[in-house]
Image 1 (cartoon, rainbow, N blue to C red):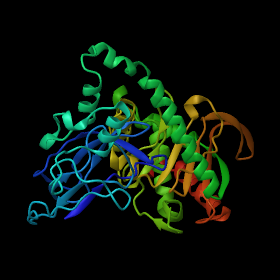
Image 2: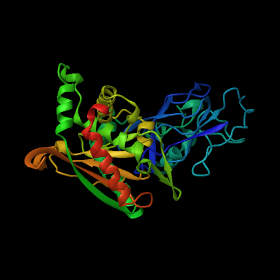
Image 3: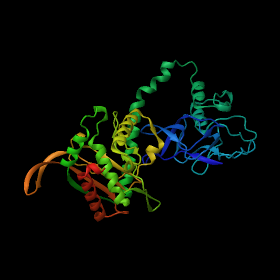
Length: 390
């Protein structure tokens, strides 16, 4: 038997609210399958399971807000038999957890199934839980049951009134979460910053030729060329790609690049575009367009939130010349791109107007130094001079 815990879906996530279970006790699940939807401060995220098994007990009710690391369910290993009734392990929350609500046996002598969140809400509202008939699995008393008992006969329109402020509340929560993560980053990570002005004439010519004859919906964007160039440079500088955890650097071979995506309601999310270095540009373009669409629709998977090994932020469309970003922990580097614009440039002894872009690097001094960072940016510059090889 093994535990399924609420994963960290980014450095700015301390807790999440379970929205929905996609499985029930007895269901067989396989690695990568979506088993739950969890609402974070930024989006509702499809949470995947990372091991094959059979669901034994669901320990958290929809509507409960729980810290990262809380045991949400217990599962049996493939082929493992369920323990005798009453022998199931109770869940844990950071080492301990209240008795299970779904699918697990109630302790001997207990007469009521109710989650800690529902019981606490009942105390606040003065509801006698002993008089409530639970509508949850196994007769469990849910938060909805408590709310209904506290306000019998309330018109549905009145119940829905708080939704008017839901979007504003989410935006406030998102800004608070971003501020906490960035404060932690600047407090804990010894940043250093470098920038390089890169000529982009060759890349623009190549991109124009590559897009000739393509339908508009299939054209490549410079952003995807830049992402692939970053991935190619990372292959030569693995100390920019990975995580700093427990006092040491953990390099990652694959380049799962977090793409900073602005949300229409404000704020941003940087989900992962997986295995950028191993995919052709056409595939990356399709996946990037899909990622942007799903991010803004609030339809991301947990792996896309937890896997980024480095982040790339591109503010060129916003007109800025350069961006000096803050590293997103536990990552150790961030690459920024400004706008591509004509600038004075000396080429073959002549002064010309050259389209250039300022590429910046924010890196963690615990893992690399300015010399390595400068070589990384030089490699990035050279990769963008040979776009046909990307």
